[in-house]
Length: 249
Image 1: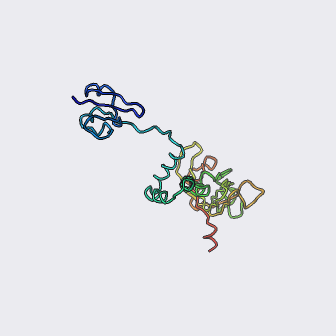
Image 2: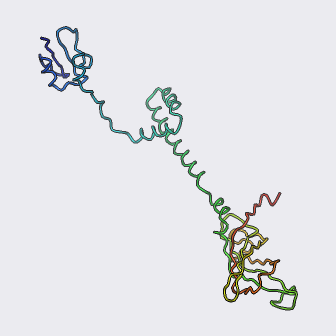
Image 3: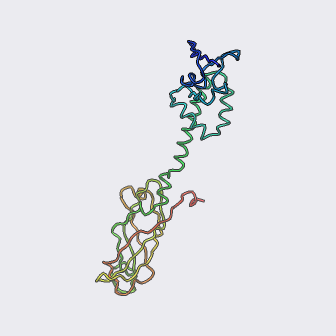
């Protein structure tokens, strides 16, 4: 009957029969010898022991946060190309410098992409004029050419008021106003859009002493019959952006 010996790296044990050996908790790396082989051999290479030799896990290594970040950076970039460059660096210090440089490059690239995707202040102001334009004291008035209210005919209608541009960077122009007409009993008669052909600089820079820019615009069409100007509602529905560069060309 074949007798087996095992060695744990320090001591030799045995002899054991095959059944006895199975009870010893063999691993794939357990060193075995028996009469018939010339040297100690790992259990995984002995045919009758293969199915009993359990796999040996690799030594546990605590994960380094720097190495984790480095691996993520390689995924963002061309991993094969990064590995090729790293392989050409012979000394350990150089590899470490390369690792930190790659991480820094990835962080800077990420910051750049985030800034690119986030709307700038100017872009936000250009796309949202109604958030930065505020209408105050807007009135619908009945005038005659001499400037009298409800004076002798011929009469015409106009809208006047104060408009504040609270944006920091963008100048607006051609502000669109919507007028809703009502009777004295607050019955809705319809609405109309009027454009104020005027420039409204940021922070009302036309006049540093005022918090608003005064405007007036003539209403070319007569309001609906029975309109009561005291019940009319006027609001801003849009505006164009005044481009200084284009205007100067």
